[in-house]
Image (cartoon, rainbow, N blue to C red; front, side):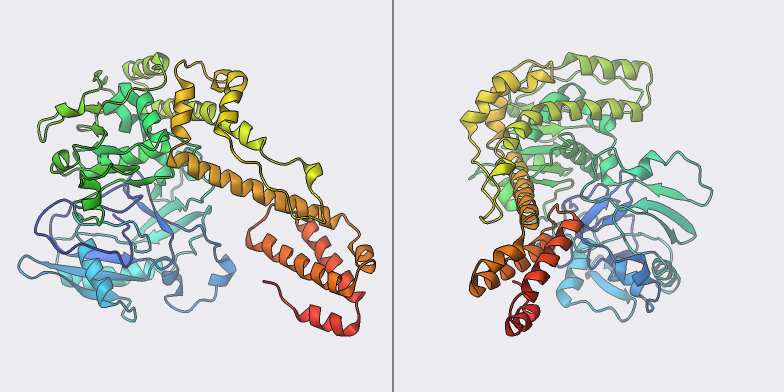
Length: 555
């Protein structure tokens, strides 16, 4: 199952080559012939896909309330999840074509139909724009059965689904099964999704419980490069260009997603392609040798990439993912010049020298777990906790320094604009590390200073700092609102001219609009109090001004 985008920009058809899914795809099914069944989502921001190959739709926008969906017209519930479902026929001579669109009233442009035909190939599913849901079901039975029986049954079941509310555990009937899933929210952190924590609980009515992309089996994914997890953590942290060469789309996707999640709670801010293919629009950009590779993690399976991406600085080559009970063999870091097209052995090919000394304890702990046949889930918990503690030790000094850039609350005046944050100074930050660096929470030795200097130039730092800037700026705006509410604004207006009072009212209205638009961290009581101030000021003005201000909106 794959979730490619609607209106994707696709390359012209080619007779051969591997393909891939867009950003966030974690599974891919290989066809054995027959007809493909496709479905598109209207409003989903992007795909979330579980390690088991199930695809979950996530919405970060404000969800519709369940009450809104109690009295819907036919197909309205269906439309909350999908736009339509398509049958794509395959012909070796003529190519592929959309044969059926269901529900029949659904409309698609010619370009969308062309994209769907492309995306029906599991080997050519690409692109990052994420508004299209694509579900491939390959059948060897009669197409007429698919068209006449499968479609109506599937679509009828979907039309009975509850609305896709992020954060809510849903039970979805589909062809006699009941799927239990939880659509993730943007606030979710790896390893904290409730549905996974409760999957062990027996429920006779539930046919299957679908985890989300956050529940990648870390230990299983990193097993082929077991001894280099700390170096890989550094490469991901620094946003280095990284290629994962795997024998299958599933292993490629899971390994890329495991890499991205290993720096949690820090968000990976560069691009990543769990399954990149020769059909992706950036293929030429990523394979050219005329410019440095971009900050992106690629997962590939086509042996052709061993040659075309040989100039990339860091390449992970993995073989078949081993069973949990097998003790991984230590594989040394290899030089890129030793990477051959077809017969290269599994390992990490790079000239990168880690900044931090290797943590032997985590390696021994996981090795002991393998020897004692510790469940892979338990191994993954240990590994995730290790990554979490390592990332937090790294980020805490930055958090502490950035917090010091916040102006003091006593500097906030209701009669002046909110004060600005102080500028981030790399030199000032580096000075704080001597007494308040990562050594306070981590026993790892090494060149922490060098690691920080490198990180401050990375996309991950830029994304993290922009997010913190936004949070602190919103906090300043919220504190400014509270300061305004604590003033006697009516008394102030009586001491000033009508022009100044009208200007104040308009500014206060804009403040309320800003608080709502930007979701400022302001208490509801504060907003109500400010609205009361506005009303009291307006009532103290002449009638003609009252009429104007009561009708005047904000911008």
